[in-house]
Image: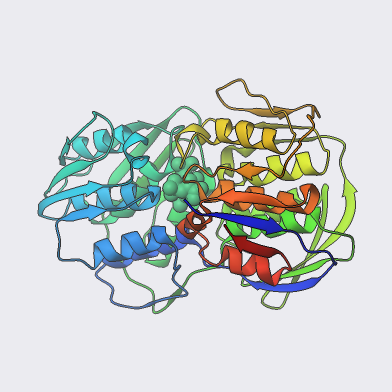
Amino acid sequence: MESLVIIPPKEKKTVTIELPSSKSISNRLLILNAISYSARPIKNLSDSDDTRALYTSLHSNASFFNVGAAGTTMRFLTAFLSRIVGEWVITGSERMKERPIGVLVDALRQLGAKIEYMEKEGYPPLRIFGSALQGKTIELPGNISSQYISALLMIAPVVKDGIILKLIGDITSKPYILLTLKLLEQYGVKAEWNANVISVPEQTMIPPEQVTVEADWSAASYWFQIAALSKLGTKIILKGLKQNSLQGDARVADLFVPLGVNHKFIDGGIELTKSGKSVERFEYDFTDQPDLAQTFAVTCACLDVPFHLKGLHTLKIKETDRINAMIKEARKLGFVFSTNNVDNLVWNGAKEEITEPPHIQTYQDHRMAMAFAPASLIIGKMKIQNPSVVSKSYPSYWEDLKKGGFSLISS
Ligand SMILES: O=C(O)C1=C[C@@H](OP(=O)(O)O)[C@@H](O)[C@H](O)C1
Ligand SMILES: C=C(OP(=O)(O)O)C(=O)O
């Protein structure tokens, strides 16, 4: 498998980056357009693998869909197809077959859906016999993946009598549920969320005249990281980000202030500059922003800031077991992380000497590649295995790094 040698820039730079658009928003809009039979084009649709997987599935005449590694596509399509008459099969990558979907399948079965597990109980691939669904009140755990909840909420307005979800336990990735409700609102859908109960009555959807996808704040996090690890005087302009974003990961801007990155919203984007003033220790609960955890772990260690990252209970069922992947790969950079093996990642400052340029494995996880590459600003030359994995959410990541002055050599 291919790898990429990364050589950091020598000089401080001013760089302008056109960020990719959000795959989370793109995939919701594709489903909402399909459910409301809207043919209106979506502006600035993501060109990521995950959005391509959904777009291709929705525009195909086939009854078999392979969604690859795309979690949202797998979960959203399962709910969507459950109410389309026909027999459908959805599968995905080997890793997708290890990512649980039982909570969503159980909920859909309560609405009358006929879904079979084709291999392992509780996991893809699925065979779905689509039929009309009957809405009701469903209880489901809120602490495994918010994608199950978003998938159900998006079909709710067109399910007879609507759907009421009673979420049991803590709610994980809440901003993604809010994102779903805000986008449903753009399609004229009224919903209510009180404490742990979300209700979406059956109602007519009114597609908006025009929908535009925002730039991706999760992708922006790697540029905040680069700003934090660059020389003083570096300026990074990220185009397409909005201050009043629908995305929960917009929190990254404030979270980087104590790690020495200042930001200023400007016309059409945001400008990052390095203040160089970091805290002595970083602590944060990532329950609401799980996709940012890798960015912060690598940044803090490179800045010599010990940390305690909490709320990481969902990281084990993402593209890889991210907690263990981080522990293993950070060690190659000389940082010794530890975990309770449930929901946290800790670094007390322990370091080991490294003798050769690190060769980072990415475990089919785009965020491993994107969060580790900026470490080269501190460590020097390093190698990233299987760099093409970034196309899951940010296909132009390496091209953009080149704009930032990094030299990249395929090997
Ligand atoms: O709904 C979404 O668009 C997402 C929800 C989150 O997943 P979980 O709800 O499984 O944490 C996030 O990690 C993922 O990248 C995208
Ligand atoms: C977890 C992620 O994606 P998904 O669950 O949609 O595969 C991600 O992009 O970090």
